[in-house]
Image (cartoon, rainbow, N blue to C red):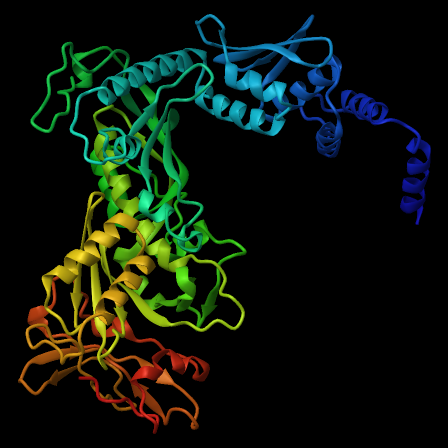
Length: 595
């Protein structure tokens, strides 16, 4: 009660005061803080909130606003007449103000260089866009926030500048254009992507992966808004081990090219270098979920061990779900592991994707989210970016299945699919093709960032053009739902025919209640096929006891990558979810014969 009474008195006392009076009071309270090195946090937050309410219309108000922004970034702040200085160890910002609170000029001065005008920062302050100005200043501070004492910072800053010049030289080497869109070609196919040369007010940045334009032209419902351009900021970071870093260019003049068109780099021992407790970093924006095998390949390329201490390992789809989870996505959990995702497509078509948790728990599918990649030499960058692109393509395809927008009320899924891992670079999608009673499997193999191969099994056709069609669509749109929608339409256009004897689709194994595991099945032609069981639990009114459905393909028709493990397809569903496989159930609750 005493606290409420005090608040009421304070409100009454300051009810007639202006925002400026309140602001000055908070500042005076902050200046009286007992610990000068750490002002009272509640007062700091109050001051920041008050700043947001101010209309910056005077020089004094603009000074206060810039001071708050500087302190938020951990920078110093000084005033000389009408000029404000936001200072850090290796650079400072110079802001010249005018009487009405406007900004006349903004300059950035790196260590050892004269101040240079920054038009981008000037326009942000003139438009009073303080949030964006603060973000750009944070990026700038990160660029120059180099660890170590003053001597070490200067050496690392010089090394980073030499690295930037070598990367620029790499980006200017001639190459053959592969994509009709020059910008996309540079980003996805360039040796080091699209290099945005570091200026005084902008960090050295590489754009290295961009989704195909064909996906952007499709309905917004199947486009993931988080997948725009993948960026890496080039900087330096502290390291537990000392590394040799360049103190001069490692590209000889004139450059000598190898058969792949890359310059022949000088070893660090043959040129000026320093051994320092740091390494270069590619800071990934946004961070990239990477499989275990890819993380190991990164270490092999850069010869720098990726510290495992702070890495959190989980199945790849789990990281992809976390990375783009929003209020718009819709998922239905069947049990503690398996998840169903509903994906709406253009034309009112609804897809349902089952991601079996047990299958994705395999060691090969463990992944972690990488926010930075350490390296020590510019020669590491092209191979590192190519590996990152490869992982980004795998992520984009799987993300198209596991992240989606919410289903419309009363909507019914037209098609159901199951996504299973086959290797670290391939996965399969099982579905029920139109006009048949069998199952079909689409095997997707991401060979590298520029090549995806798709092969269709068990759809009642051995037409190679079907594989070519699916591969082309997949490469263009980088979306599994869009590709399967196109494939389903293509299969529906075929004349109804029996399954091809050259590429058998599926037979069914009726497993008893006690044995839901895989079994060998012999078809009418004597071909031995593998059958994978999946226990389907239901009540007495729908399914009697336990039934199993299976997808079987002749072993000689399967690619080596296809996972034939008996335990890969054990999924238990509740009675409400039996309709997922209702097309394979007979009227008496038993599985129908699959031909």
